[in-house]
Image (cartoon, rainbow, N blue to C red):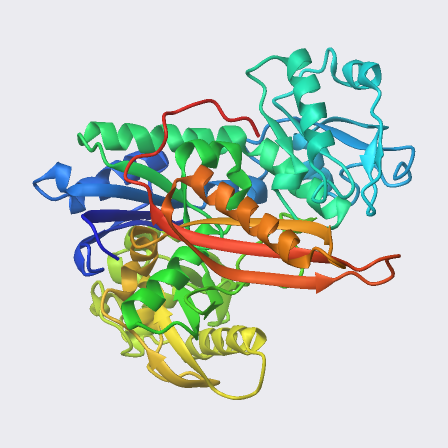
Length: 516
């Protein structure tokens, strides 16, 4: 990494972390502050703690946040979405939002219609009925519209045509999400992701506004970015267009930060926070992507997410009356509720202090009590989570990061070596600070005679998405091209995926409204 200073900020459920990193990737300053009820306040405070005297020396500020994930899990602040599936007369037997948890569907469902049209796997396009679409949309009181159709990855033109038609009806202020930009093959899973993307627009808009306000309050004019699911960056305008891509950013930031701090590009990463522990894998310098659809808040989706297993173990995890380990946490109240800090709630942090694993607070407040059963249970849960993420029985290198990782020792079952790097406690913020910008594309194409051309088209689409996300068009590198042959077709066809990464552009292109 070269250039000026960068700042990474990561808003977690317990703490908001920030790190100032120079052009060589060296951590210059860092801070951990409790996450506040208004996350913007925590962002502003963390930013102020690491800013250099020369504000102009900061060229980039990147923010990772759990707001989108928390909104889906808690069923709060989500928009009501009208879903249009362009696929009639087929697919009517399984309507949109089938299988959604009832409480989440009650919040998000703004109605649905399955209208005529759609693309076949062989490229045939069935015509739409423009009057039918206008009738389906007219008079709906919704926050956003989600549009999807079968095999739109192969030909997105019909989704775009329907989006233009819908925009004429609902006006320019209602965001429209199209499925060919969200997920992969699989109509229902891609449709689910598109609906979530539309529902999250206002959530991420609030984050963007708070972020911008924090920068303005400190007089910072550096280029702002949000981090996304693969540990890379995207412009704020792009984040408003694709808010669902921020859902896995916290775990991805920690994985990238752990790799940067150790120099390792292939390892397992255990990130211990105040509320949860996330176990992921760094592969060739980037988070390993989940091979199957990811379930978010009870909804199955198929957009690309980091392969992470989360468990209820953290510094604020409560101890049960039976002197074992609960799954709930005191969260950001740890420094007031835990026994060692003068509170009255026994936590895993208290147990670790009693066991001599860590020093914090006042150990005398424990009155000689110890909780060996809780410590053993925490060790077992983390070891089991690591085992779930391994692809063989062989021991693996482990990078142990996160503020709560000090609660664990330097040996773990299943680990050949445990690395606990300097500044492990703010690895998430460091991961945000050193991130690149990426673009990914997925297409279905005939590969009998034009395989190379199809791959190049897929790479070009990935390049275009990277540039839209804020990458320097002159510094893009292809890091992955995958091909999966599709069986049972009447001619050779494949599912192609491409990913490119590059350094952020010095300044993003002029702001413009982006729907989706």
